[in-house]
Length: 413
Image 1 (tube, rainbow, N blue to C red):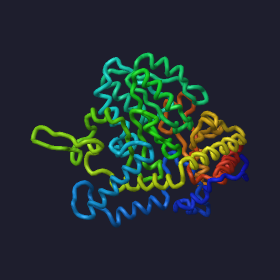
Image 2 (image 1 turned 180 degrees about the vertical axis):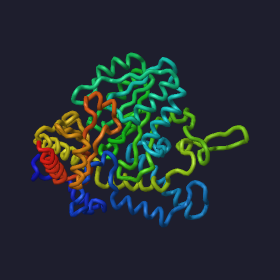
Image 3 (image 1 turned 120 degrees about the vertical axis):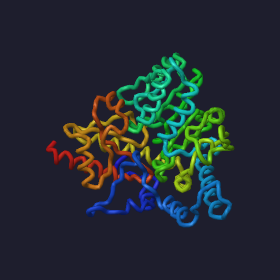
């Protein structure tokens, strides 16, 4: 796709809904290419948060006065909207602090009751630390072992390797829907099917998928699926764990205290039903309303249209970046990739690339991206990462490429 090619999706009109993207710093517009770290917030989300704070703020589930009823209705209404958005049920849609807490909840509450000495947990080399470290801790605590699916040099999972590990009858397979470094769009439906046939439970880290891909969790059939609100154009401090009902009902709570109890006596307690059993204390009720507004906003854009637009932007970025001398791009072809491109420029540390781009107000990420095992597999200490969103335009990509030419001039390449 050339720079002048037409994209039916009007990303510039979408960008106009983001106040922060209208800023100029030192006379330069912001080119935000770091949505994989956190998404910016459109007016619809900011207005919902403002209304919650200004007009409807009261603790949920407890008060009988109007403000408390309004806050509760907004909170539970957000849960219903989010559940519909991902094709799940409200009772199985649990609010957490983020996807990291969602995975830790499963590792603690399900893992310690179901994984024992000598059992196997299967992971992939491309997992975020949030989908590695909790399983390391569980394996160390109970005497289980971790095994990793083989990955090709271009960042695709070897399903024959998965089948060999499934022959070990693992208790769990944990996999990212989309790699936060390589952008690899993993075949999670096929992974779930094969894992279930082998008797394994499957957890999917959907942090990099939910903002970009139409989802039907009921059809996907994963046992646990987690994502985080701030990457879905919502606020920080709220995430979601969606789980299979029978597993959630059998699990003990991860956190205990107020609001998740049925009855407390001096020496024993009982728990509320789902989903509240896993939501101890005051929930992030204001943040949840913001996330509810975010998914409603995304629904209004149409996830199919957003996905198609981001796929075109990613193809265009891969084409343009390939023009930069000395640039190595990591990950699979465009058709097997989400809205993420990681790269390295010969002779320049990724942090230096990001710092010089930052002077131009081109916002990218540099580092190991909380994926140090993957960096070791790639044989690099770090990469620079550009990640795209509904508001990304070809002009943003062109600015990135022009910025990389500036980097090359600074380093006299």
